[in-house]
Length: 388
Image (tube, rainbow, N blue to C red; front, side, top):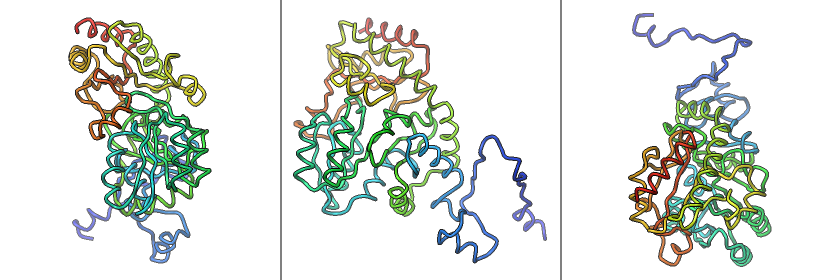
């Protein structure tokens, strides 16, 4: 071979079969090959294991999918490039013109927009309630043929708690699928419920470092096999290097989540004792309207604390500016503590009657706990409250 050819067709190093790496390698390759056409066709027909093209499957992303499924207590998972990508592709994969969706005011804003605007253009109808309207949930499912129910628990930003057993029981009785955006609760929670599909933004707690984006849907092998066909066609694939970083982050997922929850509980208790705070939204507090339900459903109450400042939105924005350790930034689950002030939050996409059900007030502030020392964070909050 001449030099140019030799530089492309290089020898490959493969460890012996009993000499495996402690950390799974990154398969940063789009294409995979078999020695013959016959073996390639066998793989494409599903008659043998193997990989062909990374938009369909890649060893690194499959490693992540298996890990996520085990953590959530389900059979399989499919990953993609972002959390909202997982929401959008799941909705597109499950719904068709004429279908009805039950959704909720407290749902993640882009999910609401996908249902109310994008899917409505294609003939998908919806009903929107509050997640706490248990009677309304039962009434809608009994009275309207419904394809799926999509919800969150705890909700973002005011940490309302869904009665998951009630929702899944009503949905199953009337032939509807349940889809739970489980991002705030985390991969280790709610797996013991009767939910059909779990959606996660891997950008948050799974990664844990705020430096990579990803999304996943987790469920039975049958449902994931059905969805995977559409995920492959829609093309929102997760890059192998991003999958590797998320897989690495998952090794410290539980210690991080536990510490952030402990911090959140202490911060919530501190805020509840402040005269300038009208109300604290944290399911770990006995004063939370659904604390008892949360205690039955959850091992940990979450890392997000929201609260309402009596002085309103202006005070909330000044409070955010006065903080020294909390960064004004989107998302949650990072090593850094974050804040979303009133000026950057609110159900602005909803009409007034629905927005009134959301539970947000003019002075609502959302905190997401990081991994800093809890005493330092409380001291920072105290000085910011004093400053305003």
